[in-house]
Structures are given as C-alpha cells and as structure tokens.
Length: 376
Image (cartoon, rainbow, N blue to C red; front, side):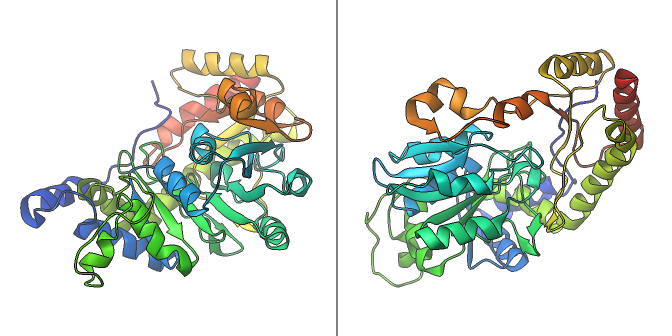
C-alpha cells in the first residue's frame, strides 16, 4: 500500500535530538535548538518574532488571546477548514461567523467578508488552503477600513508566498503547523509569527503560562511573576532539535515536493482538459509549497468510487474536511453568513492523493496509472 503521508525524515534529526539530551542537557522549552528555529524563521520569513509552540492549534490559541477578544465578539472565517481554526477563537468566547469559499482555491471568498461584518466583528481569519494564499490584498484592505485584526492560519503554508511575502507574515499574526502531516515536522508542533512588534512582549508572557519569565531571563526584572492570561505553549527542545534538521534542508524538501506535485499535474492535465476532473488552481500572485495535490470529481458518488478504486490498487487517497458550519459544534458556536454555494458541494468532490517528501518515481507512476485507469 502506498501511504497517503510519510513524515519527512532526513537522518540527521536523531543526531540533534541526542545532542539536546546528552550534550546540551536542555530538553524542555526554549533551549538552544528552539533559538535556532526561531532565528531561522525570523530571517527566512522576515518577521519580527517567531515562537515555537506545542502545536498549530496552540499557535492559533495564542493568536486568539493576543486579539483580546471578549465574549460576544465575532470572528469571520471559512467553514472549509480544520476545527482548530474555529476552536481557538471559540475558547475565548468569540462567536464564529462562517462564510463561503472560492471554488478555485478553496480559500475564503474575500468578496463575502465585508457583508458578514457587524459592529461586533473583531477578527478575520485567512486560512491558506493547500498552501495557496488567500487574496491577502483584499483581506488586508477590508481589515484596515474596518479596524479589524487579521490572523493567518498558515498551518499548510510554510514556504509559500503571496506577492513575494511569506504566508504568515502579512496579517497581524501568522500560525504554522509542524505536525507529522505537514511539509516540515517535529511530530506535534507549531509556531506563531508576531508581525507587529507591539505584541511581542505579551506573546512571550502568554506563551510562558502568563508570567514575565522572559523579562527575568533578560535581566529586566529581578523575579518573575504571574501577570496575564497564558498557557503552557513552549515546545520541547527535543522536538525543536528534530525540526532543526528539516529547516536546514527546507529548500531541498520544498523542491522535492514541488517536483512530485508537477508530475501529477503534467499527467492529469489531459483529464482536466477533457472535463473529467478539476485540478488545483494556483493564482499568478502565489507560489505554493506543494502541501497537497487534489482532484475534484464530478460528484460525491464518483469521489467515493475513486477512493475505493485506488485502495484496491494499493493507493491510500482521502477526502478532506466536513464543513464546520454543518457540524454539531459549528451550529452551537457559530452561524453561516450568506449562502453555502461552494463549501459543501466543492468539498464533496475533492480527493487528496499521496504527497510527501521522498516519493519515488515508481510510486508516483503507480498512482497516476491508477487514477487514469479509473477515469478511462
């Protein structure tokens, strides 16, 4: 069976983990490897501050706290996303306002954001599906005119760009995931990018269980104490050591995945031209990171048959999100603004093919042949 995902592994990860444990004698949060990862992200992505977290969900939760949301405040977000995008804001008492997606990129439809704004709206969440950017110019313009904060859920977008700017660095806050299913992995982990320096000190406090411990380490206070809301969001330096190996090879991993993605595209383009399926859309302003490759079938029934057929051929393919607004929690904590024209119907058609670092030509050929055989 060809797995849907295989976590990236270069071979140097264990050397760094051993160094953290045996030589650095520092395996809790904010050790030497955490510092290396922070500096790498800040320099590579040109953001004032990057901080590792225990997960992408934790990064979103930190962003929600930094937005200083109060019960009843509203957050606009797409329904076609993972639950973490929503739960992070629901946990601080916000009301979720879901809007429809664009059928081409599966991202939030920027033209539907403004009609969803009320006097209670405080935040727009831009979730970059498949590592392909939302229309950030339009979103940032809306936010500026309505005095709203923008949180980028760039869990899938590490190494992707919009008009040359790294995803996660355009909004007020950006959130990455380094889960084992992502392009770069530390098992469980994430990072928050603080793109407005005014929020850096509070971000450090929230990440350190609400204490001013970082100020103490810098010698700015003679003892540290509890000063604000917070949680235990520091990532272990063991995980950071594992991630460091992959960040050092970030370009090689990215190029390898893009080559696999292009192999799919080149072989499935004739199917799309014949109208048998729909391929991903990459707008001209975007550079993607090959986080996923998906096809859209003509219907939910055909998608189910394709997934079953591929399984018989030894290929693990999967569908993706159940729209949040149709879930029990989504109905409890939010509402859908406007009409669901594409969120459900487009999601029902989508099937994701195996995509990971180090895919062999033989496996890619097997997958392509199986898909072509199904449509033939």
